[in-house]
Length: 140
Image (cartoon, rainbow, N blue to C red):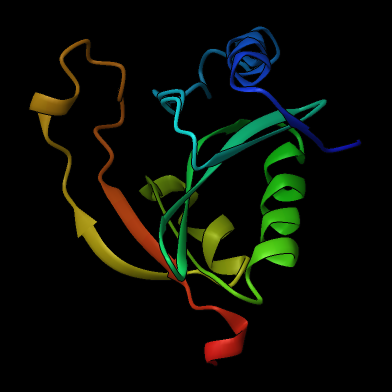
């Protein structure tokens, strides 16, 4: 699977196209990242992600949607390419905790399920959100 840097438009097409390949039972409510001049958009055959620089030494992973190894490939590419200089932060549903821990991320905050953020009832398991950080390798 090749990873490509793409335009925001191409990211959106891939992001919404992924729904066709993901079992609806496994499909979480993941919002596509908003357009930002500071962002980099990456896609592969089985995934799409946005990386946004939010400060001089921190980037945030947003709008990650993938299946069957696409998420691991995208995340490992981001770590390899950016973690030598940048802290990496992200948030995800608690069911993904083992995946992010396995990739070296540390939980820094937890938010319980809040129905106000799920007006359509998409989060069937009423999962909370965990916020993660992977400190820059240069800072370790």
